Amino acid sequence: MGSKEATGTQSRTEREDFQATTDPALMEAADRTAEVKLLTYKELYLLWERQQWQTQELDFTRDREDWTERISEEERFQRMYGLSAFFIGEQRVAEELGPIMRAAPSEDQKIFLCTQIADEARHVRFFERFYREVGVLESDGLSEMLAETSEHLNDNFGRLFDEMLKQRTDRLAAEPEDTEALVEAVTLYHMVIEGMLALTGQHFIMDFNEREGTLPTFVEGFGNVARDEHRHVAFGSVFLREKAREDERYKQAIQRTLEESLPVADGVLSPPWAEEEDFELFGYSLEETRQFAGTCLMRRLKVIGLG
Ligand SMILES: [Fe+2]
Ligand SMILES: [Fe+2]
Image 1 (cartoon, rainbow, N blue to C red):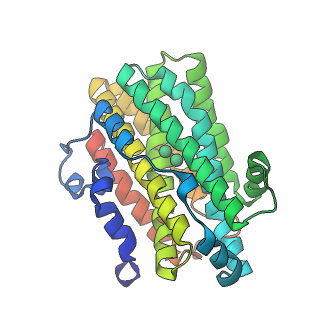
Image 2: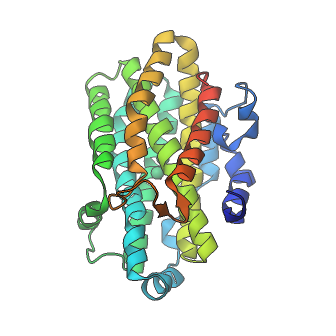
Image 3: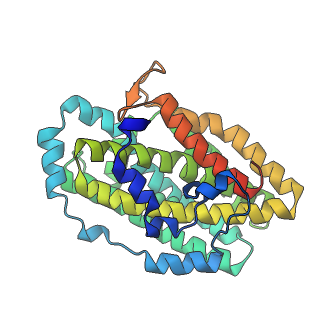
């Protein structure tokens, strides 16, 4: 990506607090060896205690000026796809994590997943506050906002969240002792939705705003969201590595879920108005976006033992 690379994103993921999460995608060593050290569930919990932040502290005055005065109507419309996918995505993952937490076999895993539910709730409130303070939509209540912004999404989004993810969490709610279903759910939730989709979208959206010099407080809050996501993905990586080593059956469940969900997740990367594949979003082509997502996924899979 060369000259287009914004220094902000690069230096962000090299920061100590991002490196502390041990998400394999942030570790260059993961290109060479599967033996990188990941945090344990207990250590991830302690890191969560140290990495708290508040949505109520964010002041969006400058962002509101940018949104209403500096960003054109056409660009506002184009930005709505990414914003909506995140806003709705955060709400879906917050509300679908309960059955995964309950099905986790160990107490340390359950307690970490409880902290993740709190994080996802905070991410929903972050978007709600940004929308309200900046005046993105007409709606004011949270459920009205979600309904209004969901009009910007595409069919693949619905398939991934409301069909593939929901089927698996419904199954776990009914059969919490089904470890194979749990492995499938964590693969879809932590590896595909958070690891591949969310962190890729965040990388390009923050990079774009930093290059354009727009929405500084949004970027600040979104950076906190990204740090949380790296911690969540680190949980997924350590959990799936453990399961993959435990039983060949679980390894196959990871493989199967990736094969089924990656094409759908890839479809979520394209806004509904992008009919051709050669469109640019946030200054990057779809191919560049795919490449970034692919590299991150490969590093994680290698560490899990599938690469
Ligand atoms: Fe989140
Ligand atoms: Fe998350």
